[in-house]
Length: 372
Image (cartoon, rainbow, N blue to C red; front, top):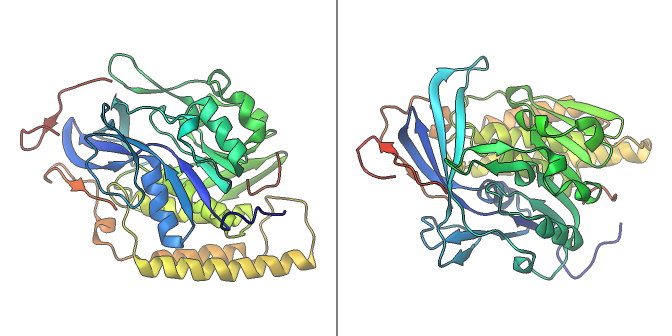
């Protein structure tokens, strides 16, 4: 495919608002962090050196510094989510989570997007900030657009802001699916779409937590194995997965290998509270393994032409093992901690198409009795 020489190779456009995230366990605040999918994605992209622009909006009260400056809306507050966890453990060993949007910043309008061309785009809204006309504009600007389905199907209870899911066909975005390259959904979110229908329109990637992910495209299907981890905070796992997945694609990996890279970063994200901090040695090792795998895949494709987009190129299991070894390099101490935050003080964490085809205010108890 001929690329537009006016913009750098692998330049991406990431669209979605930054957020304030408050984590509560049994209605007690245990952490306050930077949130929003763009923050998790940028953490991965900055580390693996994927060039990108981000378009995000925040309010006058935005509490964090970021490497990619957002648009400040002076008469609005920053989008705020409360994630309520219960002490009870489910069958998978995780706490149940109820997510509530407490307040919302302005949506991102088509006019907020830059008038330039991009190799790839990512629509990753979390609070209803991406509109159908905004996604349509992204599809015009970007060669390939990957979408997190939460940007399309989330609805919010008018009384308490609890996140609900609507059917994809009723979302106002369904007619754009044939133009989307990839759509990512969690296992829970698949109840809002008919995978058998959607996979005929675009590639669907379903994340399944500790079971890895499954990729669906036309009549093909590929199960991609996980990387074991201790879950501390599930927030941002899907965002980090999508970042790793897209990073793999723009580096030239086949779809199954890119999904494996997504699983790696998703597993790293859940091991920390808020936006993860990665060991620089991890990034270096991952980049080396990706380049080695890319050369291996290129050599194989020269020997054997395949139409299958989801074929696992020989050496896939070795690539999985190499990434598992790379993961062991990470030495961030918080990655080893368990979800036993009830005795900890509130924590504020300051964070820094590839296929060529078609508010609610509520009073919250804090441990020290103050306001979040």
